[in-house]
Length: 145
Image 1 (cartoon, helix red, strand yellow):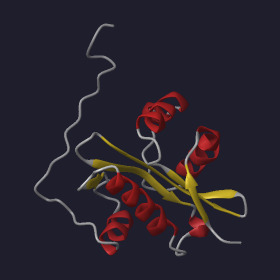
Image 2 (spheres, helix red, strand yellow; image 1 turned 180 degrees about the vertical axis):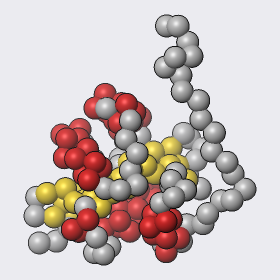
Image 3 (tube, rainbow, N blue to C red; image 1 turned 90 degrees about the horizontal axis):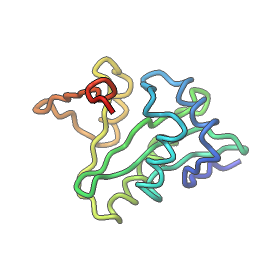
Image 4 (cartoon, rainbow, N blue to C red; image 1 turned 90 degrees about the vertical axis):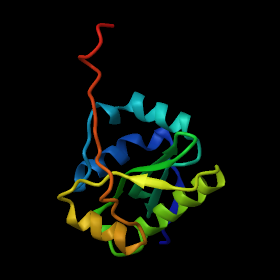
């Protein structure tokens, strides 16, 4: 059966979350809870996709933007479905939509030790930005709400 790329909907969440858990290089946190993913999908309509083969989700990606730059998160392809071009197709689908929504540049975060992930992204035209450093702050204990 052919691989179908369709928009990510909340009804897909449980299956996608299981996929993310099965793939190396995907860092999951509270930000990936059902409520947070629902919020992300609502804020970025039409930018996230799943790949289905024989009715099963074999790939997924979150895409979105802040109005200035686009972002991809959690691109995952089931290990048994790799080398079929699914990751490339998911990426191109998101990029096409982000471009349609006015984005000129898109970023992705990849763990520094994820050599397979870095090699994949470079193989499809992305470049490593050695002039940037990612910095983060956790807010859950910073403010007394």
